[in-house]
Amino acid sequence: MPTVDVNVPRVNQAVTTLLTAIAFITSSPGWVAAAFVILVLSRVGGPRLAPITQLYVRFIRPRLQPGGPSEFEDARPPAFAQLLGTIFLGLALVGLYGGIPVVGWALTLVVTALAGLAATTRICVGCIVYQRFIMEPVT
Image (tube, rainbow, N blue to C red; front, side, top):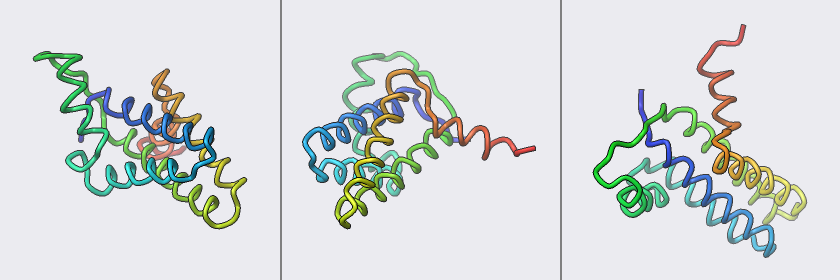
């Protein structure tokens, strides 16, 4: 089972929240595109090409836990949640650049709210969906 430092998804969620909130506040789809590209790089390239993961591993973690152990969790639920966020932001971009801005901004706000919830409370709705419907068979 792959594992991840529990802080890596939180930092990714915080950055996603920040970028998508800036996009909505400034009405700039470019920020949505930036968040989408970061998520795609993370999904396709794994941790080595994930910009926020590398930022955390190289600069944040050493300052939080110098030489100390990190807490790890199953990487599959946050990876699934990230996949959902990537899909939603991709669809948001289709709406924003395809002439349906209401749909694009609505999807952007969903991602902003769910990423913000996960970053601040560790309540990850995508992780819950994964654990309930994918890890455990539905009876």
